[in-house]
Image 1 (cartoon, rainbow, N blue to C red):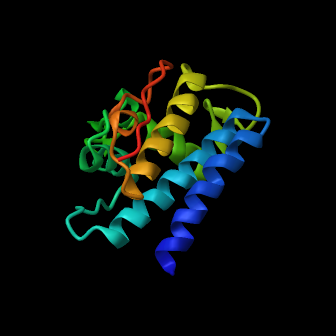
Image 2: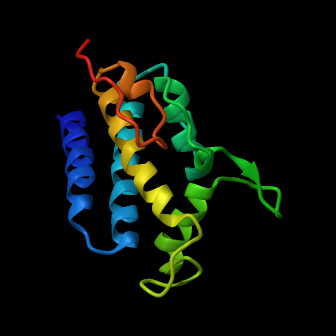
Length: 154
């Protein structure tokens, strides 16, 4: 029952995010959907290696399900020597400081922001379908492309 709740929650946030007007709202909702996919995968896949930090979760999901990881989920060491990624940096600023693009919500957009939000929506779709057991050309394709990928049923 818990797995069904997580799957429904991920799907709900993924689709509900499309209704938001502001980019930071769409980003936040898609990130919540990604987090639900992470928890669902941890709960239903014994072979999945859990990550403590948000900096590695998206790339671990990509690796596990065979999806091409976008550059903004690839971990790197920050100036303090801690591992992070562009997705985690944006998420942490929004979740902990109510900042988006280095400014209070609604007053700025991060560089390349639209591309990440669109890519995150695409990545969540691929990860959610993979977590539900679908593996095909679509789920394995890059989330940063706008080209159509065949979606054949397994």
